[in-house]
Image 1 (cartoon, helix red, strand yellow):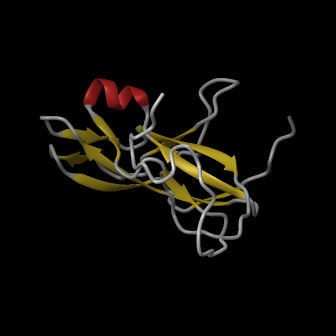
Image 2: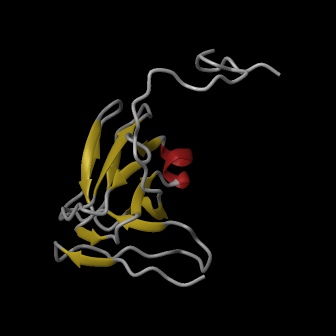
Length: 147
């Protein structure tokens, strides 16, 4: 499969460029571009800078997702998971970390805090109509599927 070029710019001198931790990893690890450790108290949220900006080609998005190790070991995750970075966004990639745990969590400078997955998406048109086609489920609601 051919590679898709995604340009990136380092915005902070302490930024660590995203990297994949194995040959076939889908996600690129994002690191905290902090000058000093930052505590996240239990039940609190902090926006952590990555120190980078990216330029995606049209038809692509980047998703910011949690790291399983942080979730399992520390009960820390990405609050708006997955966070979407659109192809026309040129600002700094930030990670909204939430501490689901009972103890404060310290984000260290250069700590791997999330992963970024780049995906192709379809260009669609939304068309307003007076009614929709019928299905077996119809308007049964969330969790209403029957077998």
